[in-house]
Each structure stands twice: as structure tokens, then as C-alpha cells.
Length: 116
Image 1 (spheres, rainbow, N blue to C red):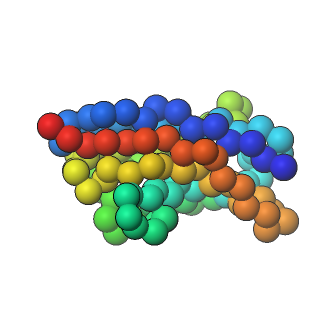
Image 2 (cartoon, rainbow, N blue to C red):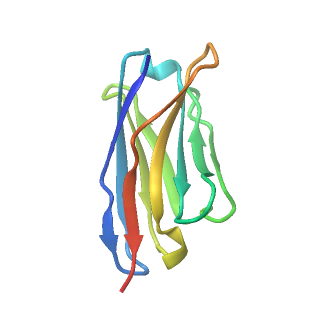
Image 3 (tube, rainbow, N blue to C red):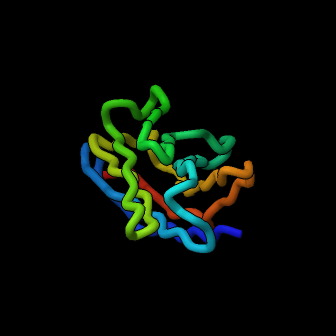
């Protein structure tokens, strides 16, 4: 089992920045592929970004160039730095862990609202 706890969400103005954190426990964090997903009201959950254990990163086209995913294995934490935020970035953001055995775990989510 992997436990994931997200934090850092909140209300931010368009064009602003926010950094989300996800603290993990219950597994060898450095071996996991970590990711961020989001779900806007009335929409399906969508993939945002992934970082592998070899620090390879990938981003959805909608956030590429604005969001940065990173990880600190010593702290068992993954981050999502979001900048140039838009109203359409408003969503609940979920942390995800994929273990080497193929098990997937989710956090409870943290709300991000972009509004003036």
C-alpha cells in the first residue's frame, strides 16, 4: 500500500502560480513513477504530468511549458509547479503512484481554483 497526501491547493488569480506537493509513504518512493491528474467539474479525470524514477518527465499538451513536475526522493515527495494559470486549470488535482509491480494508488486530491 502507498499512502499519498496532497497539499498546496487554493485560490489563485489568472496568470498566477501555485505549487502542489504530494507526500508519499508505504513504499520505496524512489522506485515509483509519480504523476498528477486533475478533474474539473462535470469532466473526466485527465492526466497532467508524470515523472519516472529516472526523472523522465512528460506533460499533457494543455500544460506543457507552464507546469513543472519534480520529485525529492529524500523527502518521498513529488511536486507540481504551476504557472501562468488559466481559468481552465480549475480542478481537483490528484497525486498518483505507480509501483514497479504495476499497482496504482491515488491521493484524496487538492482543489485548485483560478479566478479573479
